[in-house]
Length: 235
Length: 235
Image 1 (tube, chains in turn brown, cyan):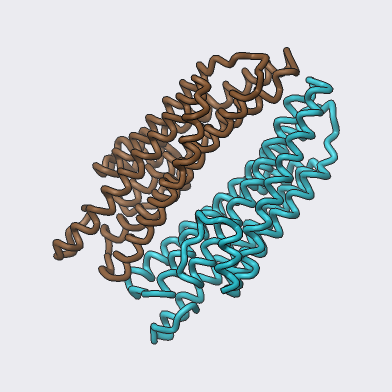
Image 2 (cartoon, rainbow over the protein chains, first blue to last red):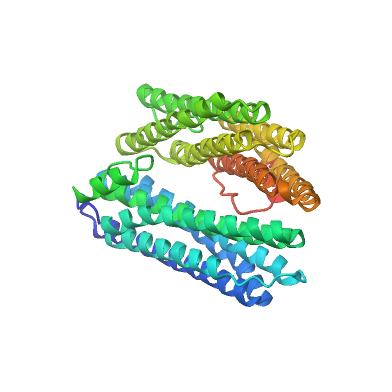
């Protein structure tokens, strides 16, 4: 817990249960992303369908955790650090749900790519690399949330620049590809949307890390520079 | 107010002030989008720079309203409809802030398009049409919030399908363009990202309308079909 102002053991247990559910939801979302990239690379359409069908599980967890937070606020009237924790959870699950949507989008693009009798066989080397980075950010932001670890949170914010740079690299490479052979344009655009989904996963992980700084420090760092966040974290 | 359980006039005034600020923030974001499209179509780089520089105003409003909501929760301990209203505000401002980011992205793409000695002079007919739709959704979702108007909210959810369809139309048209003349690929991709930003504005407006249904009905409709939302609203 961030603060220990409350005395009720039951209240502690409720907060702990909500935190545990957020980490479970994070685990599910991480797995959806990992599977979506695996399915994309291997062209595994049944796996893509499973990922698309499983998105409702992520959505259901968001609704359930949101409802728990509302009940905690209404019944327990949390203050200070406890309230910040609940608010952080409410924002975090919105980003987790949207990461889940990106997994679904990657699976849908994967289906288009698998079904197209493609003229190029994409190697996905760069996509895999960008996805590893985004997954690392997601894991670190969940760890930062679990352990109130600001050093991890600051790392994630810094890493987001790398994912953005990866996206630009992939885009340049796809443009070259399209210009050399215009028949690859549709395929290249589908890969571009996969790259965009990965870039957005990085954005959401960054948001989550910024909420952790708010939760621990009580300071809103969503719209400040990386350098300011690093300074805040070191203080 | 959704409920009248609280008795304090001061509390009423605080809730009313927060609602008014959300509508102000919505007005600012709407203006940012409108100006971004105007600047794009006319190639007005100074206006694009102004839009990019003004994004911090949207961010500052998000932080300020968020802080007001936290204070209301901590001090006033709202319940039932009042709590739902505060929670709706917290979620709504996140979407409004991200719509602001899309305005900034459109302005940045506009700068690239204006600075490129373009081989094609885009007419932007389809982009303007899609943007009008998305702006209409944004206005309606703000009206739905202001007046607790569920009919408007349901309309917005339905309109999101139209914006998605517009996006697909623009994409098909750009693919044809790129295939006919590969020298237009970079320009076409920039226009595609503008179309994507407009599609995302529609998504955010849809989110906001779903929160209004939650605020009024106490029912979470984020992950149900349009038909179910329409049924819920008519009940």
